[in-house]
Length: 157
Image (tube, rainbow, N blue to C red; front, side, top):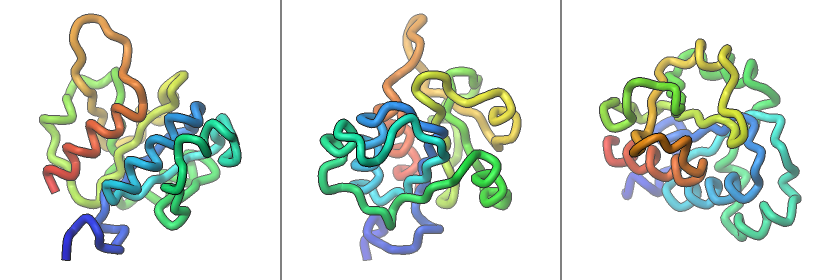
C-alpha cells in the first residue's frame, strides 16, 4: 500500500497552526495537507471563521474534517502532545530544517502570520528550526513555509 494513502494518523506527518489569522493561508494549508496526506492541527482561537468566504474560496472541496484536529488553546495542545516532539518553525532559530532529522510522528508547529508564537511557546517546544533565507528578508508566506518543511518531513520519512 502506498504510504501516502494509509489511514494511520499516528504515522502521518502533523502540521499545527498556532492561532492562524489569515483565512486564505489556512485554506491553502488545508489543501496542501489533504493532497500530501498530513494531519492538520489548529490551535484556536483563529482570527476568522471557517465559514469565511475567503477561506471557502481557497479550500474548495479539500476540507476534510477527519484530517483536521482543533484545540481550544495552546495548553490543551501541549497537554495532548506531551509524549510527542513538537518542532517550531521560526525565524528566531539557529538550526535549519534541512539539518534536522524528522520522525514520523513529529508535529511541526507554525506561528501566527501576524506575530508568530509568544515566548512561552518558544520555551516549551522540543526544537526550533528555521528556513534559511537570503539577505535580510523578514519571512516567507505561511502556506509556502508549510509546503517547504512538509516536503522535507515526507522526504525523510
